[in-house]
Every structure is written in C-alpha cells, then in structure tokens.
Image (cartoon, rainbow over all chains, first blue to last red; front, top):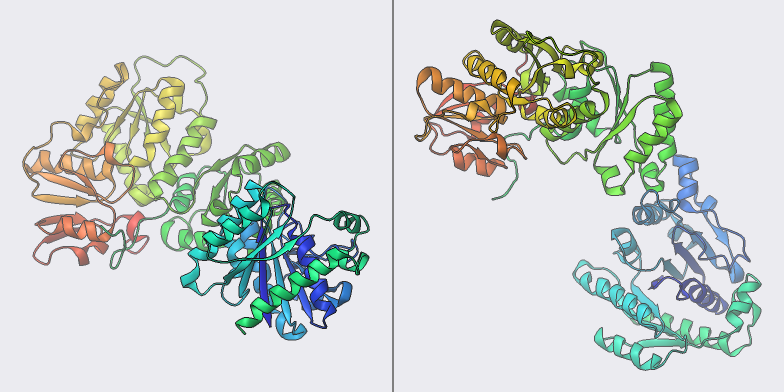
Length: 253
Length: 368
C-alpha cells in the first residue's frame, strides 16, 4: 500500500489535483482511497458528482460507539473510495484534534484492512498550523508528502513552511518530502522560483500542471477533468503526475 | 530548578478553588471537563461534600464534544439543570481541554444568562493554577457582580468587618472560622460577612455595610481590591489568631479612617535576625502565625510559600518556593519546622517537625 499526503496553501488546487490524480491512478487498475482532511469535507466532491460524503466526525458525533465503517465510505468516479474527515463548525472546537480523531477512527474500524487500497491519498487542509494537521504525515499514515504550489509568493511561502515542518519531523519517523508539484498560475519566473524552493529543501519539482480552462469547466459540471475531458492534454498532465508520484513512492516499497 | 514532585503532593488546583469558594452561596458551579476535575474535588479537596449540599456539577465533556465545539450541548445541560434547581447564579469554570480549545466562556455565560434570566459568569480557570488563584477569582466575581450599595448611612458607633478569603482549603471546618470570628468579637468587632463559609449570598451582598475588610488568606485579596475600588472600603491583611488579633484590631481601627499604605499587619515590627523556626504554607495564615510566634516566644520565624502570585504577602525573610526540589533545598538547614504532615519526608532528619495540616495540601487525610 502506497500512502501519500498532499499539502499546500489554501485555494492552490489541492483537492482538484488530488481528485484527478486519484482518478488517473484508478484508471490504471489501482484501488485508490482519497481521504479529505479538512473540516469543509469537500475534497472528494468532484469524484462524487457534487454529492457530499458524510464526514467521519459528524457520524461519530451522531452514532458514537455504533459507528460502522460502511457509514463513512462512499465510492466515487472510477471506483475511488472516498472519505471525508470533517470537523467542527468554523469558529468552534478543534479542527486539528478532529483530524487526529477521524484518522484514528478510520484505522480503528479497519478502513485500510477491509478495503485494501493500493494507494491512499490524504488531502490536507492548507498549512500545518497545529499538531492535528501533521497527523497525516505521522508514522503509520503517509510515507511521502507532496506539496502543491504555484509561483505566487504566498503559495511559495506556505509551501516552504510545510516543507520545514516535514524537515523538523525527520527524526520522528514521519513521512518524507516526496517533492513539489507546480500548479501554474502563469506568474513571472514561476518555474524558476519553484525550482529554487525545491533546491532549498534538497528535493525536486516532480510534476507541473498547466493553467487550463478545462479544469473550471469540469468543476462546473461537478466532475473531475479526468471524467469530463479524458482525452485532453490536461488529462495527460494529470496521468503523468500520477505516474510520477506513484513511481517515487514505489522506490521505497 | 526542576518543578517536579517526587514525594510531596501538589496543592489543590484552581478549579477546586472556585468550587470551594462558591460552595455555600446557593449558586451552581459547573466545571467544564470530562470528569477528572470533579473526582479530585469531591474525593480530596472538599471536606463539606458529604455533609452539606451544594450545586457543583461537571459537564462530562466528551472527545467529540470538544472537537466539534458542541457548546450548545453544554448550554442546554446547564439550562435544564438550572430550570429545575433555581440556583442564585451560575459559575462556569474551565479546565485544560476547553482552555486548549479556546472555548468562549464569557459568551456562553452571556447566552445562559439571557436564556435563563439567572446571573451567569465565567471563572477563567484552566486547571494549571493553584487554588489561591481559583478561589480568589471566584470571590472577586462575587464582589464585582453581587455586592450592593448599602441602603442607609452607616451607624458611626459600630465597628464592623468582613472576613475575606475563608475556605476550608485554608481553614478546615467551620469551627475554626468561628474561632477567628470570636477573636475579633472579643475586641468589639461585628463580623458582617465571611467570604465564603457560614454565610449565604444575601449576607455577602450586604458586605459594603461594613467599615472595613480583613483579608484572612491570599484568596481574599482580589475581592478586597474590588470592594475598595467599588465602594472605597479599606482593607487590612492578616489572620486574627489569638496572638495577632490585638494588632489586627488596631490596624482595622486605623484603616477605618484611612487605607493603610502597608496593609499586611503581620509583616510589621518583625524580628530581623535569621529565623529559628520555619513555617510552610499559605502566606497570610502562616505569616500571621509567624508574627504571633515571634511576639509570644521571641524566636525569629520565616515562611516558605509554595503558592504562586503571593510575593506581595511575604516579608524579607520569607520566600516563594515552587517545586519539591527547591523546597527540600531551602529546608536543609531548618531546625524547627511547622508544616502539613506530608512535608515531613522532605525535611532534614535532625529537625523538629510540628504537624499543622493544611486541607489544600493533604486534603481530608488529617480531618477528624
């Protein structure tokens, strides 16, 4: 089983990228599980054609000890297994601790043993702002962390913070940095800046995605681009990225 | 110096301090916590638990309630209980989990007050302070919210006083409090209210009728300052034990005319030489005892205080010492020690040890 965590600044396109990568990996016959680690619980929405997946924490709140694994699993496009951790209403509770509890519940109820995914992708909210958001990179969860960024300064700054967190945890047996993914916004010196960032963290830019009008068009249809425009050049880019991420993770298996 | 505890226990925490201070006032005190805070409180800290009813509650906070911030459940549970029990007020005390969560207690108290019509207020504890802080801020809230402007002009001939900072944590059972009151009454003082043992909220509400406040433990200092600010009431600090009551009575008389610059009676006219006797504990009760011993026996006494935020209540020979290691080190050369019996194992073998149980330290173990 390959386990990946994807981080990056809010709004950079993590969920869109992760959903398309999940669909691309599933195309090759792999069983993929995508776990949204965000209180908004909308990571897998494109794989589910706009239909929400009930969040683990809401279900746990409602059913307590009667919570069953099947309650929190939904199957999306190409058979991708969709899970949403969920979290509190904005401004209340503790979202970070929520991620920890949701991932622990999933493990406790045997999500990985029962569904036996070949690939698990954790799509993690924005920055590593507290302990809970490092949960997906902790021992027993992801093995590799990929960080999505554009060439915009704020995105690079957030990406550097996340990479720093991964670096700080290297003695703890946490996930390693797999590399950066450039999601182009077509700003000046974009590639050069992200290459520099990768060099600073002694890693590389493992994939580049173009700024494509087809991505928002697919979102309008509440679908992944992989489903809407499977023969497009952009779909090809997602396939290349998916293969690259998979290959990097396979190196260590 | 490490602040770890190997042999001796730690003092009662802030949450228990709140409950202890508000126990007899007819309000409802709710600790927002899974359960640990209440079992420590009723098992160890509260000597009145089995003999006297009080509305002390625990919210039974669960993991998922904390994560999702299910404040409404907390509010609904409190309101449900309050509608049945008609408390005079509702006090909300925080514990480590809501502290880490940033639970907005002032906002929750406001919602409860609006929805029930019962005065509700937060007491910002987090389980990481000692009881002096917790009980102190609880009484401070009572002073802020409930004490009323006196109806009539005071009778010029009366000499009346409130005792501030009286909880079983420092004074044990009620009979000890009655002794303090009797000591003052011998000197012609009328005790209007005792904060907060043996008196109801209504009595405390009339506190501003008294001429002066007497802070008998560190717990009462915050309330004294509020009453000074609100009503211009002067205050004096000291415990009226049998040896110090005369000095305290004189200080109260003077304070009735003007707030003294140095209100701590027991720090005045103290012996300057190195101490022969060491007292350990709460600064006001122990400081007053130290002054009393010096006066009666002519032996110099110092106080070692293991509680935070008490520096202003200590004298030149005294010290705040936090942690067992620091206390053990400071006791190395002590010849005569007066302290709670649980201190004995860290005292030098060749010292003379006199037992003086302190509920805030050893709980109900030595209460008979």
